[in-house]
Length: 427
Ligand SMILES: O=C(O)C1=C[C@@H](OP(=O)(O)O)[C@@H](O)[C@H](O)C1
Ligand SMILES: C=C(OP(=O)(O)O)C(=O)O
Image (tube, rainbow, N blue to C red; front, side, top):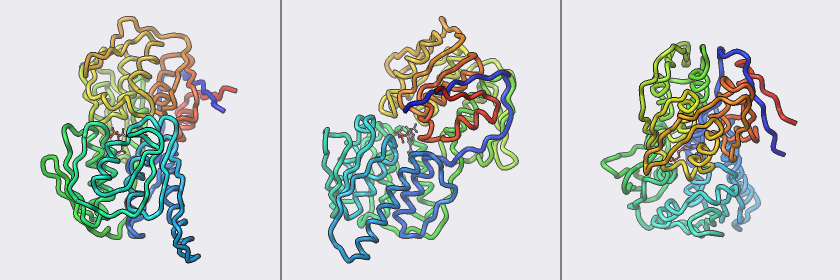
């Protein structure tokens, strides 16, 4: 049953230490690399994110099925039904991963997952020689992967502007492809830092690549024995930056975060500097300090950090800062149509997010601060977490379906409590 949460905060200050769980993005890559490495790679600091737990279970069941078959001398192939729920990266990474496995698999997910496109990745894998069929709607999960892969070519092309996750999925399996991979990215590349993260993590496992122009090449190679450490999640950290931005005073410490992160969302330090939040890297983490500062930056391009969009747009709206945003094209195919969800919820404080082609402009001319607000979350963890900091301005904030945060940050509500928010489960 869905349970809502009611938030309030007596003082307008935010002080304390918050230990964030591991990055969902880093951890999901690390787990796939581990699974492909024949025991050579180990992951350290596994994330509590539900999406990661799901992926880990699927990958470990996989090896169980294989060893059971070997033990019993069976050579029959099981048809596995794998349901990854709402986990987008798991869906995309496993599509590529199962291409290299022998058994037949039906890969499916939540109702929303069945509306999130996968055709670009399936086409690319088919170019390589994969046998994949759509079970329901052409271009969307569920899909059936038929195993018995024989590589036809190493050279394929893929559109870069829909989701970088398709590219990551291919790069993760590239070194295990008998002929390697020469991937031509057509057109614009969205979410570029996530591709860079993938290549950097592969490099940590000694998989070399070249990236020249729009072509990334990885030859057939062996993984080296190594440990892949997972840094805390910078996307999760962004909600603490937004709390600092909306508080009158803030002094927060987030242990384990580093200045030179593989996560593109660490750019939140630069973005939030515009809102008077300084980030000091010392004592093995980052200290957030708040100082009064007039807001000046008016344009934010979020193409390289789409998961920060809700955080930043809600903070601007709450502060009445009429900024313009670009790079939001991919938001419509994430956990929900995030543009529509933002428009609906911001309307509850009188703010409009106006779409003008590729530009989105905030109109705060009719902004108001109500006594209480109810936030719909659309099965999107980031809607819940981006709007929760409003409890610093609005006396009572009710958030629909509290458990939605589990996707990436299960301890979010208890961490808010530690920092002095009153968090009440609504019966
Ligand atoms: O590779 C990843 O770990 C991710 C890539 C991004 O997706 P897109 O490339 O679809 O923008 C991001 O939004 C998602 O949360 C995680
Ligand atoms: C878009 C996200 O995740 P995914 O695509 O992996 O479902 C997210 O975490 O914001």
